[in-house]
Image (cartoon, rainbow, N blue to C red):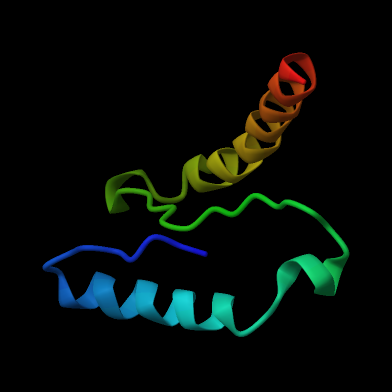
Length: 77
């Protein structure tokens, strides 16, 4: 499902290991009745920029990105 994270940082390895474990514990496709979905793993904002709504904008950008993916998927079929 997911490519194994390769890192020397023990904290990141534990964090993404936990995310991977939870992700594998639920079949998102059958649970929500979808054939594809978009995630936002690894979204990080530098502490000096926190409170500026950058994280929110990055999350909202997923919708635009997904629309672009759908557009190209329709065009290329």
